[in-house]
Length: 105
Image (cartoon, rainbow, N blue to C red; front, side):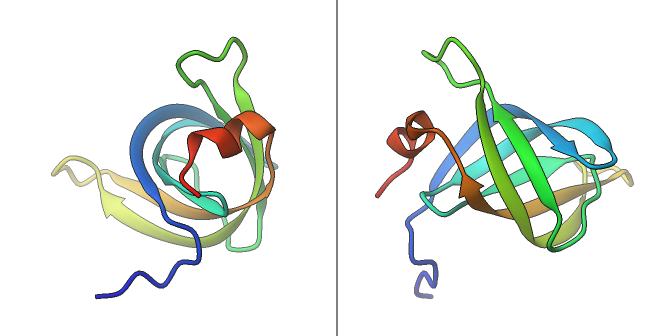
Protein backbone atom coordinates (compact mmCIF):
# COMPACT_ATOMS: atom_id res chain seq x y z
CA UNK A 1 0.00 0.00 0.00
CA UNK A 2 1.36 3.44 -0.93
CA UNK A 3 1.55 6.28 1.59
CA UNK A 4 -1.09 8.88 0.65
CA UNK A 5 0.17 11.61 2.98
CA UNK A 6 2.18 14.47 1.49
CA UNK A 7 4.52 14.56 4.52
CA UNK A 8 6.37 11.50 5.88
CA UNK A 9 5.46 10.59 9.46
CA UNK A 10 7.82 9.57 12.24
CA UNK A 11 6.52 7.07 14.80
CA UNK A 12 7.09 8.21 18.36
CA UNK A 13 5.73 8.05 21.88
CA UNK A 14 5.83 11.58 23.30
CA UNK A 15 3.74 12.52 26.35
CA UNK A 16 1.52 15.52 25.77
CA UNK A 17 -1.34 17.52 27.20
CA UNK A 18 -4.30 18.43 25.02
CA UNK A 19 -6.34 21.56 25.60
CA UNK A 20 -9.78 21.88 24.06
CA UNK A 21 -12.67 24.25 24.61
CA UNK A 22 -14.11 21.73 27.08
CA UNK A 23 -10.98 21.10 29.15
CA UNK A 24 -7.58 19.40 29.32
CA UNK A 25 -6.41 15.81 29.15
CA UNK A 26 -3.16 13.91 28.94
CA UNK A 27 -2.18 11.91 25.92
CA UNK A 28 0.59 10.42 23.80
CA UNK A 29 1.73 11.54 20.36
CA UNK A 30 1.93 8.34 18.29
CA UNK A 31 3.39 9.84 15.12
CA UNK A 32 4.21 13.28 13.76
CA UNK A 33 5.02 15.04 10.50
CA UNK A 34 5.46 18.56 9.16
CA UNK A 35 1.71 18.70 8.49
CA UNK A 36 0.08 16.70 11.25
CA UNK A 37 0.20 14.32 14.17
CA UNK A 38 -1.72 11.43 15.66
CA UNK A 39 -2.56 11.57 19.37
CA UNK A 40 -4.00 8.94 21.70
CA UNK A 41 -6.01 10.51 24.54
CA UNK A 42 -9.06 10.21 26.76
CA UNK A 43 -10.45 13.52 25.48
CA UNK A 44 -13.29 13.40 22.99
CA UNK A 45 -13.12 15.92 20.17
CA UNK A 46 -15.14 16.65 17.06
CA UNK A 47 -13.78 16.91 13.53
CA UNK A 48 -13.02 20.56 12.82
CA UNK A 49 -12.39 21.43 16.48
CA UNK A 50 -9.25 23.47 17.20
CA UNK A 51 -6.96 21.99 19.89
CA UNK A 52 -3.68 22.99 21.48
CA UNK A 53 -1.22 20.16 22.02
CA UNK A 54 1.59 20.75 24.52
CA UNK A 55 4.59 18.43 23.98
CA UNK A 56 7.41 17.90 26.45
CA UNK A 57 10.32 17.02 24.19
CA UNK A 58 13.67 15.77 25.55
CA UNK A 59 16.26 18.54 25.29
CA UNK A 60 13.69 21.35 25.28
CA UNK A 61 13.31 23.47 28.41
CA UNK A 62 9.69 24.38 27.78
CA UNK A 63 6.86 22.41 26.25
CA UNK A 64 6.12 23.00 22.58
CA UNK A 65 2.62 24.28 21.85
CA UNK A 66 1.08 23.12 18.59
CA UNK A 67 -2.20 24.63 17.46
CA UNK A 68 -4.07 22.02 15.43
CA UNK A 69 -7.43 21.12 13.97
CA UNK A 70 -9.04 17.71 14.37
CA UNK A 71 -8.97 16.07 10.94
CA UNK A 72 -10.38 12.69 12.00
CA UNK A 73 -11.14 10.64 15.09
CA UNK A 74 -11.46 6.98 15.97
CA UNK A 75 -12.17 5.14 19.17
CA UNK A 76 -10.16 2.10 20.29
CA UNK A 77 -10.07 -0.22 23.30
CA UNK A 78 -7.30 0.61 25.75
CA UNK A 79 -4.85 -2.24 26.27
CA UNK A 80 -7.33 -5.07 25.82
CA UNK A 81 -9.83 -3.59 28.28
CA UNK A 82 -13.35 -2.40 27.59
CA UNK A 83 -12.29 1.21 28.30
CA UNK A 84 -12.48 3.30 25.11
CA UNK A 85 -9.91 5.94 24.18
CA UNK A 86 -9.65 8.31 21.23
CA UNK A 87 -7.02 8.48 18.53
CA UNK A 88 -7.12 11.93 16.96
CA UNK A 89 -5.68 12.76 13.56
CA UNK A 90 -4.63 16.40 13.82
CA UNK A 91 -3.54 18.86 11.15
CA UNK A 92 -0.94 21.39 12.31
CA UNK A 93 -2.14 24.99 12.03
CA UNK A 94 0.66 26.70 13.94
CA UNK A 95 3.79 25.37 15.66
CA UNK A 96 7.17 26.67 16.85
CA UNK A 97 10.28 26.10 14.74
CA UNK A 98 11.50 23.54 17.30
CA UNK A 99 8.59 21.26 16.33
CA UNK A 100 9.46 21.34 12.63
CA UNK A 101 13.08 20.45 13.45
CA UNK A 102 11.88 17.26 15.20
CA UNK A 103 9.86 15.77 12.36
CA UNK A 104 10.99 14.39 8.97
CA UNK A 105 10.82 16.56 5.87
